[in-house]
Length: 555
Image 1 (cartoon, rainbow, N blue to C red):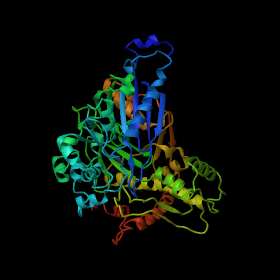
Image 2 (image 1 turned 180 degrees about the vertical axis):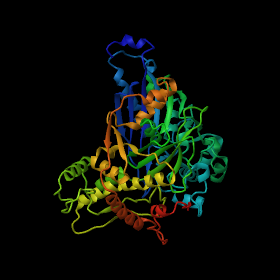
Image 3 (image 1 turned 60 degrees about the vertical axis):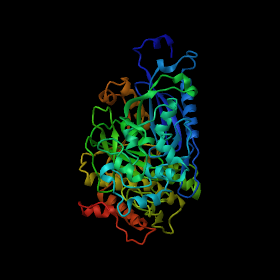
C-alpha cells in the first residue's frame, strides 16, 4: 500500500482471503477484487497409511497448517500499520476443501476422536457391501450417488461402530460429524458454528438432493444420529465471523462462502451456464458439467451433485460429475513405489523432447504424425478399483501391450495417458446419454495441465477444445474467492464476475477420427481385462455397451 490513509475510505474495495484445504496440502491466498493474487502460502500435511487401502489425515495438523498459512498470508499487511484488525481491509473469507473426508470431534473441546478418514480410503468396503446387498444404487434416486467407500456415510458408520461410547456421545449431541470445511469453520468461530454447505453435504450419501436436507430415512437405515450432523446452508452464506486467538487479526471477518473443491473449480472457471464443464487434474481427476436447476440422475455411472447455491431463496444449480481415483497419484506411485521417475518435471522433459523429435527413442519408425508416445502400451491405474463410470472395486491395475521394444519411459507415458483415457470414458457418457450436445470445450486446471503433451493428447481423444486459464493456476481458490466476495457484495452478481479479465491457453484437437478410434479400442481392451479382477464374474465394459445400447440400466 502506498498510502495507508486510502484504506480508511470505505469505498475502497476490500480483499478476500481463501482457505483451500486439499488432499495433500493447505493453501491460503489473498485476492483483490480483480482476482489478482496478492499473497499466498502453502503447507503440506502427512499422509497416514495404517493398513493397505487405509488413508488418514491428522485433523489437528491440518488445523495448525490453516492457522499458519493464514498468518503468513496476513504478513502482506505488516509493513503498513502495526496492531490493526484486518476486518477493515479483508471483507470476506472463503473456504474450499477436499470433499467426503470424514471427521468426528468433541463439541466442547473441538478435539477429534480419530484421524480424518480420507475420501480415497477403502476400509469400509465391507460396510458398503452390507448396505447395498445386490443394489449399489439403493439410494441413488435420493442422493444421486451409488453406495461406495468414496462417500462420507460409510466412514461415519465405521467410526460410530469402532470408537467406544461414540454413538452415545453423538446421540447426546456431544460428538459432532463434519467434512473438513465444517471442522475448520468450527474452529475459526471459537467452537460455536457447526455447519456445512450444500455442495459438501451432497457428497455424504446422507443428503436428499431434491430438498437439500439430511434424509431421515437414510439416517434411520444407517443408524446415524441427526444430532451429530451440521446444519446445511447455501454455498453463498455468512456462516459466521472469525473469533480465534491464533488468528486474532482476522477476528470479526465474515466467513461468507464454502464450496467443495471440485465445485469451487467449476465456479472459479465461471461455468455458470448449463452445459459448461471443467476438469481438474489433481491427485484424482474430476469432471463437472453444469446441468442448471435440473437434476440429471445418471443411469450410466455418473454422479449427480450440487454445483452451488447462491441463496436459500433460489434453487440450487446441479451438476453431473465423473470422478477418477488415480490421476496425479499414479505418477506419484511411479516415483515412490517403482522408483522409475524422479519428479514431475522429468515427465515434462520426456514428453517435450519426444514430441518434437520424430526419431526419438519412444516411437518406432513411421511417417505418420505422433498421436501417442506410449507405442501401443496401456496402463490401467485401478490400484483399489475403478470409480466413474464402472464403480468396480474388484478391478485391479495392469500394464498391457508390452513388446521387447518398450522401455520404462513408455511405462511412464502410458501412465500419463491413462488419465486422458479415463476422462474420455466419462465425457463419452456425458455427451451420449445426457443430451449435453453443446459441449464444444472443456475448462481445465490442476497440476497435470502443465504437461502440454497430455493436454494435446486429451484434446485429441475428446475431440474438444481445452481451455486453460494462464493468468492464475489456483482455480479452486479462485472459486472460493468469488463465492465469498459475492455474498458480501464485493462482487455485485455473476455478470460482474464473468466480466473480470482473464487470459487463456487453448489446446485444439488435430487427429483424424480413425486414429482416435484406434487409440480408444486399445484402451477398451485394457479396461476389459481389468474389470472384475478379484471376482469370477465375466467382464462387460459399460462403455462398449453404451455405444450400442442407449437403454442400458443401472446394475
